View (cartoon, rainbow, N blue to C red):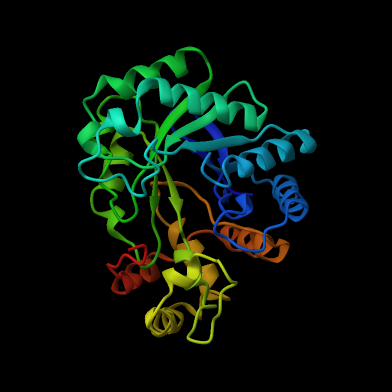
Length: 322
């Protein structure tokens, strides 16, 4: 497994991480706990040591599965989790206040809940699950973060920035308390390259790249005939003519990458890891075949520079979450 350094600590984490939203059984249909634990343990055995979960994933269910898998494996892994806004808003609204969303006592209480779920004394990386950079100068969050770090309950703190808002967090990083940003980055969503990546490289801040497959679009498996399970949130994400738009664009990408890659999914992952600023990439994985395919893709390394440059034309400024 290729490794990278989590910059503020120098600790080695796997370049391929494991996104744990799907195993929480909220909004993603079909997850089964025993299968989820098997795939988590398999990932650990294969050398993956970075797991990204959240208190909001199944109301702590995902955290509990990750904690159990770590104990059963007998190996220490690097666990990242997240605190939801007290208002449970996704994303944080422009007029929300820090007192409404992340008051100091709430930050601490939610972190303690996550520690119980994980059956751990500390969290490697705690993150705000949403953010509004209007809050950057408030002591409300800074005091809680510093307290949790001082008490050893949290080793590092980060921000999972709002969907398609890669610069929403840069002001907060000026506090020195932010060790990482989690951001959507993929062949379609290239906007983090403009300001966020250069900022993080300059300030020694790690980047966790989420949604590398654009919720499945960039795997090449979404077309007008695709039907998602009843209750699966992707039915709305790929509503109306979006599946046809995705199919046309992914076919064009495949024309550009098929001499270098064995699948669109391989191209999608290798594109993300082609950038020095990216510390780890965290696709969701619920089947062993997908886990092994992702491992094989990442282990092939970055795409050639010329191909990365060519893929600039596939940037697609959209927001299917709306």
